[in-house]
Each structure stands twice: as structure tokens, then as C-alpha cells.
Length: 158
Image 1: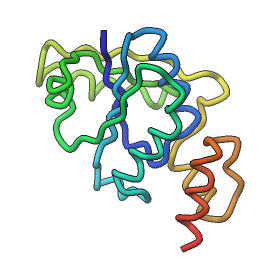
Image 2: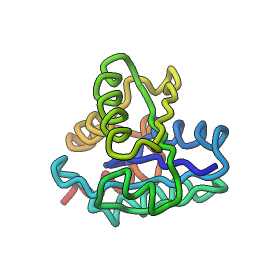
Image 3: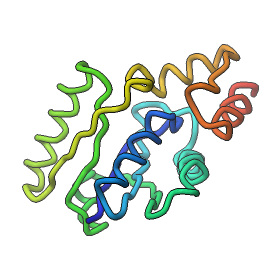
């Protein structure tokens, strides 16, 4: 069975990678779906984010990385998948994630959302925190893979 793991991934963090690895234990294949999402005003373009995720997952089998700019249920259908994988960090994530899962179900009643809890060492981690630290030239090496840390340094040096 194939699942879709959607997100903005601006940038991809160790928490995201934890969810990807755990998702691979549950599903035969995982499509990491990188959302355009201009409303979030991403630091990296969608193509840059796709490349970051591809680089960070190149050693993982059965992971495909694709961009999308549509309703998630439409993207899932185009991928012949009706399972959405989402990670939950701590309790404040749940209301928003629950709302998205319900709306996706209303849009397409075949779509199921599967939630996995992030590991304890990543429950506090967000891309926003990583970007803020990087914007002040802080060390993000404990939060993202080395490749991503270097790209963040390059982005914020400009």
C-alpha cells in the first residue's frame, strides 16, 4: 500500500525524516508530497524543497518525492493512493490535523488519514523554529541533516 506524506518541508527537518522512516514501516511506498503553499511564504522554492527532501531520503528505499499544487485529495487520487500520513508532535497539532483529515474525508470519503506520533527527541521541532535560528546564524545541526544546514546558511547569507 502507498501513502502520501504531504507538507511544505521548508526546510525538511529531522522530525520530518523520522515520520518518513516510520511511515516506511507501515506502508510499502511513501510519496513525500511537497506543497507549493505560497501562503506560508517559504524561504526555499518548491523545486529547492523537493531537492532537499530528495537528497535527505536518497538512501531510503520506496520513497518518491514530488511537488504538488492542488487539493491533497486530488493529488492522492492522481497517485492511486487513498492514505495520507501525518505526524503529530504534541497536543496543539491535533486540532488542525484533525480538521484537515475531516475536510479531506468530506472531499473524498475514500481518503484515510493515518497519524503517527513523532519521537520524543523531535516533538518540539518545527521548520519555523529552524528557519528563525538559521536567520540569526544559529547552529541548526541538531535539527536538520548537514546538507539542509548548509543550504540554510547559504540562503540566509544572501
